[in-house]
Length: 187
Image (cartoon, rainbow, N blue to C red):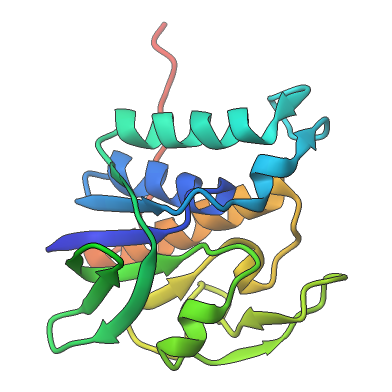
């Protein structure tokens, strides 16, 4: 069983996977290769001047893998709450997770299928988002959401930060205490 399964490898999902894996949690990141970020040219992303969306996505996945996240190219088709967590079904296989983070960008299809509450979006062209609390929890225990699908700004810097925030909240819940990750430069 995975501690944290993240669905979507764009900025929110990859950022969540970086934090989850770096914290030592058994982490699985699903990439269906449909991130809207792959169509972007980013000239306003802090710390990464003039980077293409595809390069940003690949960098995020690489960082997550370096910390130990497993990355699978597949499409998740269903989520089912079980007594022990969440059953994650893909087109090719199934997995078990204690917690799932949805970082599905513009798509709420998986949330709808899993019976997760949605609401009207507030960004232009975003009609529907997943209804989450301030920590990122959805209406289904064990399922969280981050990034554009959770109603934050579509800007990559914002969705990446939201992915990190939600991952920290999941890690904190798993640990039973607030998780903090700060690396210090060695003198």
